[in-house]
Image (cartoon, helix red, strand yellow):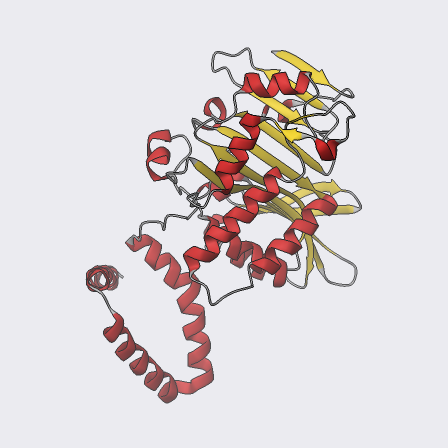
Length: 375
């Protein structure tokens, strides 16, 4: 492994190599299947995603939170587990095979203090829209205070070469950070990582080759926000996500994605310093300016492809979203009122159903009938 550094010295650890958990996002495909990923990614060659979330909250009961994160109780393993984070001494760990981890303990006043971790593997199987909804619920209903948020931007065009970036760093043609490191892997897989800023700061940028680590043939720009920066970002994006609900969902998703990309590249870059060293007069290096302009071009569309609707996904959605609502209506309306409501709902559904809906309904009926026969 070859390591270069500039500015102040930076302590390196395994995480500096970019060995984060595989991340997911718009493409909604496994990251070790680059052929599928490339086919479903935006034609612009750019993709932005969440890669990690952790935070701490206080709630009256832990079960609603676990049901919200994953309503299938069989997926949760709950066990005693001592863990200290700052002033908090957690005693129990609940986790799933997807890597969701919830540490929690009972406070003296009866409230539950919890620490949640959503890793990159969780985001891999969700669209950005799923992540937005999850974040909103955690923020508004479960009072999560974010302690770390990672955002990743993948450039499939590899617009900026690692040689050009390294040269700019050595010539001090950069802004927005003081320390930097360059790590080149000596393994057969190869790979490299640029660390921009202090690894221990509340705002840190990694630029690295995503192919050997995640199977994605792209340059990844990864922003890591911690503590106050993470919470400020979390508050901001949850406020933005609730605005302009009259716009189309695709329009909201595209705007949200652009905002995420802007966060990743905000406040740092590569520029040739003038002789008087005033950064305000520095002009971006041409290759960096072209890259940033390409991200901001109107032709850049960061839409989220809708995941294929499957029978199992439909059943899961009905169990998670429809069943609780129907049970609440049945309790509130009574048997006669609930029957009238369902009749009206069915009539509305018939008038709005498409040919795809007819096929899906037929499959649902057959599956439900098979389930009832085997029960």
